[in-house]
Length: 204
Image 1 (cartoon, rainbow, N blue to C red):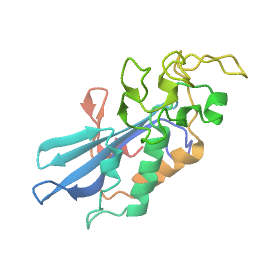
Image 2 (cartoon, rainbow, N blue to C red; image 1 turned 30 degrees about the horizontal axis):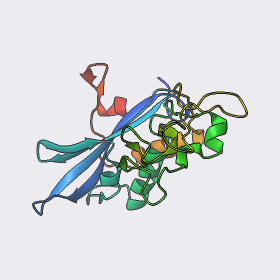
Image 3 (cartoon, one colour; image 1 turned 30 degrees about the vertical axis):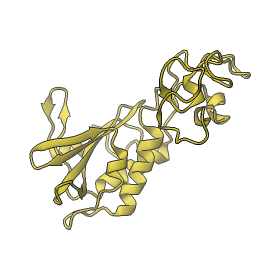
């Protein structure tokens, strides 16, 4: 079995308890994350548990960012911030709408309505017939002036949004993820191939 010292790009899966966040009734709920690296794809998902009840989860990096480590945890708030930054930047790196040239030019960052946050899901322009995120990459030029869906890259000719493109996760990012999860006081057993892995397996 490949270990951290053999190859930082080797596949791994780890689960980690980040800490606790305020709950609406004045108590606190616990936030965990599940990190999976297949060798090509990075996936990070979260869970928020209040007792035995799951009260949130999925792409809840905003909640995870608020987590406070417990007394028994060895990781820090700085570690959580680093993990959340990686989560927001590299989650599902094999599902990019643009090619490397379009990404380098910031096509994925251009907003339809500059007055709104990019993660606002609504109608942002009178020409839109459907709701979308506030990003030009998700609308056609026929809908919104400057729309980027289907627009050809001037360098390679790839038409934006017509296929999922892969953006390679840097080795330094994977090394950081391994480092952060190694600092955890508790690594929760995770489901691997339909069964629950041991803590030793989830550490690999």
